[in-house]
Every structure is written in structure tokens, then in C-alpha cells.
Length: 218
Image (cartoon, rainbow, N blue to C red; front, top):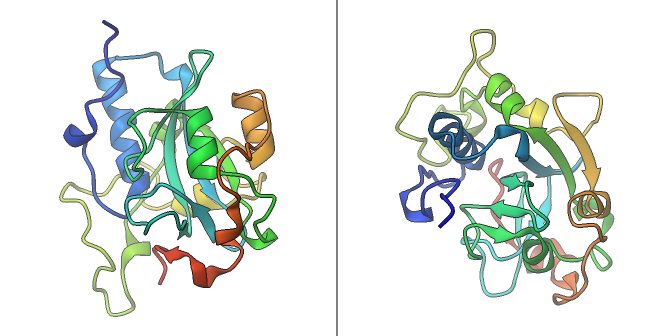
């Protein structure tokens, strides 16, 4: 039996609304336990210019309505013909094939208004572990209180930086690390086919009033 890349979902380090840190912990586990070569792993930041990105099959969703995130982060394992997605906030399997994730969680953008179209910043895991830093200031209200309870461990930082999360969320290719793709180009790169329309049409994201808002910047 092949060794698991990361622990079972229920055994992973997880804090709601801190997806970037949850994924950092997954990457750190792989680095420390050496369960796979890091060169086959990529951290995927999903966002756009308006920071309104619909995702389906999320734990915080309701029925078949999408959750509108300001950004979301997943881990991609691309060392086999069928890439695998690790999303601790998804109701899909953990891991889930990218083909299934694309069909059920990403879905087609053919019926989604342009301001909801997703972009994907693909960052090699070694680069993510080396450079990512967050002081969690984006999760504080103006009075200093927390929007959502933070992880119990210390904030992730580097020797040179305390906070650069926005450089990863920003979808300007000239900023930050990695490569930025549109949905179709991302799926073409890692599946070999553009956005799947096999799942139900994405019309439920055509209006923000029909979706579950789960933005971290409310």
C-alpha cells in the first residue's frame, strides 16, 4: 500500500477560515516526513481582481449553492496522470482527483458573470514554504478583535518577512511567486482539457444574492 502524502482529514492541522495556513501545515508535514518529493506539489491560490470567487462543495455552503470566497487555497499533487487536490474545506473526498474537483467544486464559468471568474496562482511548494508569511492582521477587525479565532500556534513568518499574504492572493502575474492561470488554462495544464460543464451549470453564481458569502474581509 502506498504511503499517504498527508494524514487523514480528521488528523490534519485545521483552523476554519485560515486555508493558507492549513495548506502550509500540509506542506510542512510532507517536508518533514518526506512522504513525497516536493517538486511534484503545488500550492494553488484561487482569487481574482474583485476577490469574489465561487466554489461549490464547501463545508460552509448550503445545498448546491456556491460559497463566495475572497480567496481560497488548496494543495495540488501532480506526480501522476490524474492530479490530486487536497482541500480541507471541501465536502469532496480528501484527496480528490482534480478532474472531479473541477467538475463539482470549480465548475464551468460559461454562466458566471466576469467579476466571478477565477484565477489560479500556482506556487511550487518549496517556494511557498520558503517565502510565505502571515501575521494574521487580515483577520482582525478595526477594533483589534478577531473576525474568526486564529490558530493556536505562532504565526508563520520568515527571517525577512512577517506578512506577504497579499502577494500570493494578488493575481497580477508581475507580483509574488508562481504562475497565474485562468481557469481554462489551469485545467489545460493539469488535466489536459478546459473547464468541464458536466456538472450543473454555474447559474447559481450569476448573482451574489444566491450564494453563501464566506469572505474573510466582511
